[in-house]
Image (cartoon, rainbow, N blue to C red; front, side, top):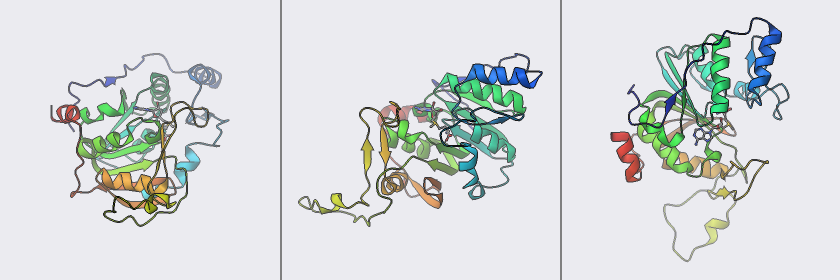
Length: 269
Ligand SMILES: C[S@@+](CC[C@H](N)C(=O)[O-])C[C@H]1O[C@@H](n2cnc3c(N)ncnc32)[C@H](O)[C@@H]1O
């Protein structure tokens, strides 16, 4: 794996603070580091026991965990938008040789760092933006869950992941909205033909100008057809679809998406 170069991605300095010595102390640190989005089990203490989605993402992951290799020995794994590190920890539990968790938000990375110290797991936490991901080198497995709809430039992120980062597998998940049907899209249409755009299964990316779910960081929410079309257009082959929102993909050797010139410079050094 290449080492990051000319990158805006920063390594998180490991805090040498002593670990909590009692459950009460552990609970106090968890409270101090809140609010938590991911519900982790830290030595029996739940970090987000009142999550609006229940035991999230544990219950959600249980629905597609078997679609991933059970043994990741020797694999390098990048968890993009790692949050408190749930998927990074799962990759480490499956034996991954190297796990890197990348997130833009230092609040969540502090949680991830603390959780990895409590769990005794060696994970490299990085603070940075998904648009800098091309400087990190290639990883066998890239986890990209719950991030696409938070991006103002979602296809750019997928293109970067395909061009410079995903080695073997991509785990993709996105919130999806709109009809779940997928229309047969023809290779081309006449200019006068407006009919395909009215089909509920036509690929559609919904723009959120203000907020969705009280969250101003939601920008683009695809329907199912659009998520699948974006993955193909970015150069991925969909291998399986184990959950309505989850796709397991591999790079398509025949499709290499173009990047804006500044990003070509970023990935070629
Ligand atoms: C909805 S959470 C999903 C967390 C985790 N991947 C999961 O599936 O449970 C979105 C995460 O993406 C991070 N994020 C949002 N925009 C980002 C960006 N441009 N670059 C890196 N991380 C980003 C957020 O800080 C947050 O931790």
